[in-house]
Length: 246
Image 1 (cartoon, helix red, strand yellow):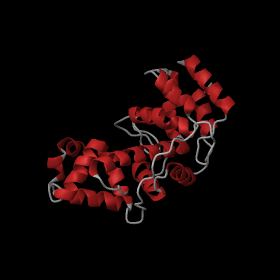
Image 2 (cartoon, one colour):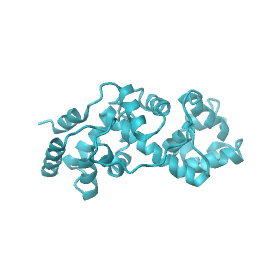
Image 3 (cartoon, one colour):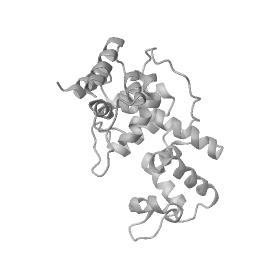
């Protein structure tokens, strides 16, 4: 039995990527234009995209660890309570069928878009608390690209020393992403230049930069538009099968 395929089929309630992203934007409150731009940059809008050199996979190129952590935190609010419970309980241990099934959900455009929205909102609120200002689309992407700590450092430098070489500020990130931090002739790009390149890449001028909404405590049992729809019986069956296979 192709159990991963069965679960993906159950949860694949949204036909197109654009529809999945729009519903995720409505559900999480994160700007639709930003989420679409991020998906375009990360995967070319291909829900089954697979990175060659890392575990990154899916529409938003979630790595295995980031996906599991995000589903653990937010899955229950979006019809993936069975997956969140499996991760929290330890049933999704390395090498288990449970873990592989949950990781396969990255290929589901609806699930990936919802988790991307939640991940962006988490990052945005953390950056806002650190920097004391609202986050725009490019700021959110910097958190995706550099992690929250790296983004806070980068955005702080953008405000205070924008002409500083970005590679000097973040040498490890620069070593892993030379095409971002250095020009073709080998000259180092400034913090402002790196930011401007991402701004252009995302088309941030057309994307909304509205403040992030306050987080709601969504009920995991209340079906809402944009939720990965798995009915109660299917969810129980899924979890029992997952538990048996782990």
